[in-house]
Amino acid sequence: MTEYRRILLDGTAVEVVREGDLLRAGDGRTVTTEQAVHLPPVVPTKVIAVHLNYRSRVEEFGTRLPAAPTYFQKPLSALNAHGGAVVRPEGCKWLNYEGEIAIVIGRTTRNIAPKEAGDYIAGYTVANDYGLHDFRDTDAGSMLRVKGSDTLCPLGPGIVDDWDFRGKTLRTLVNGEVKQEASTDEMQWDMHYLVADIARTITLNPGDVLLSGTPAFSRTVYPGDVVEVEVEGLGRLRNHIVAGPIPVRTDVGAQPSESEEVLSTAQGGDWEFRGVRPHRADRPER
Image (cartoon, rainbow, N blue to C red; front, side):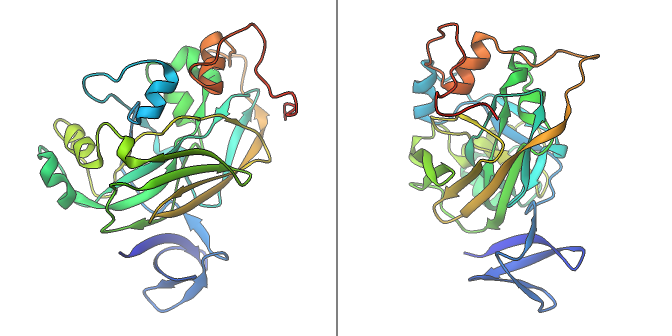
């Protein structure tokens, strides 16, 4: 397997290959993985995400999977990178992590069978499909602001080719503590199925990204938290949460809300609404 990254090297976006703790550019320049300023490892034309896929997530919500997967799209302005800051806008409270695996398309893909899909995949990377649930009441159908606000789609650190997605462990850690842990064998629809399903009617271009779902225990994070998503064989994506300095405007559009649906989704699908905010007693709002 080879891991490719995109970094900012002497002011220019450069593709590099990982060699242990070094990243090597095509012209021979090197930088350590810790010193490198990472960029999203791919430049897609679209980012498509599946709603529900992991068995534990479905059980957590107390629901059933649909007969076939359903999807939403994240705008490219949401892209972020390894080491980047994830911004919680001023006036919002319910920002949740969702550790995921991202599929990266390598060839123009249209109307293929699932058994062919592997030939069209360039590789895989780690993703965190953050959700700003303050807007769930108004964007539940499209998920546009919930999942598409700026910085809410970190990818990286790199793309790994020739990686077998079967039986791999995904973990999400907050401040070093494991919060999500699951095997990819929990997925109802595997990577090849998802690619073939989307490509029935939508042409996938080289670099396009498909997010394959998250397991149970997506929870709220706060400014100052460090969130890491680790996938066996793909590496660890690290980001930190910051508070945005500019409030969400109040003179246009729907405003952030705290309905039962917002709180239940942010704190766990089976959380019983009792008319109080489910803040941890030892965790003041920040």
